Image (cartoon, rainbow, N blue to C red; front, top):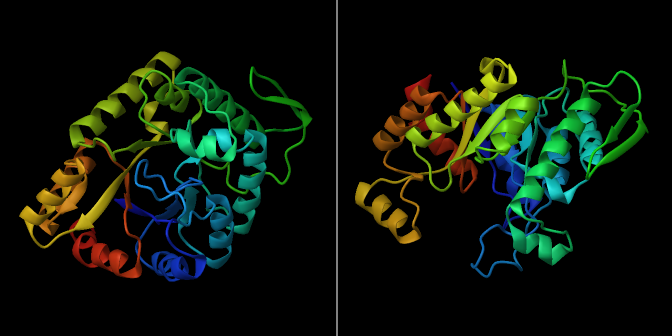
Length: 304
C-alpha cells in the first residue's frame, strides 16, 4: 500500500516547509504534493492576505532537493495556465526530478481567486470542456513524434514541437482529479493514467467505491481496461487522543467524514478505503515534521 503527503503551502515560507519536504523524501512516503491556489482556499475565512506559495515554483525547487518521492501539484487548476505551457513545465521538472513527476490537473473550483487575479471563471460545462481539451492536448504533446497541430474550441497548436520529451516512458503520468461523474471521470477514462478522488467533503469508503464503479462504466463504454488507471484518493488526516474531542471538532466544522480521530479509528477507516479499491491514499493536513512522524509511527505500521 502506498501513502502520500499533500504539504500545506499556505501560511508559511519555503524555509519553514523545507524540513518537512526532506523528512518525507527520506521516509516511507510514496509521494509529496502541493495544492494549487493563489489565495488560501478557505472561502469566507477572511484569510486572503495570508501567504499562498505558488505551487509549480515550489514543485521545481522540491524536485531539486529530493531524490526519491514522486512529485505533483494536487491538482493543477486548468484555468491558471495554458495547457501547452503546463506540458512544457512538466517535462522540464520531469528532467530535474529524474522521472518522478506526475502531472495532476482538474477543472478548478475556487471562484474568488480567479476574480482576484483576473482569470475568467466560466460555468461548470465550459470548465469541464476546457479540462477535456487540455488533457487531450497535453497527452498529444507528451506522446508526440514530430510537430503537433491541435484545433480545439479553446486551445490551438500550430506545428508545435515538444522538447525536451518526457523522461518517463511512455510519458509523464497524467492524474485527473475530481469527482464529477458525467464529465471529469469520463475525461479521466479517456486520457488519464491516475484517478484522484477528493474526499474532503464528503468522504466515505462507500462513496469512493461508487466513484470507482463510475470510472469502470466509462472505461467499458470507451473500450478501455480500467486496470490501466491507478486509483488514488486524498483526505485530511489528524490524529486525536480522545474520540469525543475528535467528534466535537468535526461536528463544529461540518466535516464528519474527515479522517480525524483516534489511531484505531483511522487504521480501521484506512483499511476500509483500501478494501474499496484505493491503491494510494494521500493525506492532507498540517504538514510539519511532527505531523509526518505521528503518521509514520502510529498509522503506517498497521499496513507494512
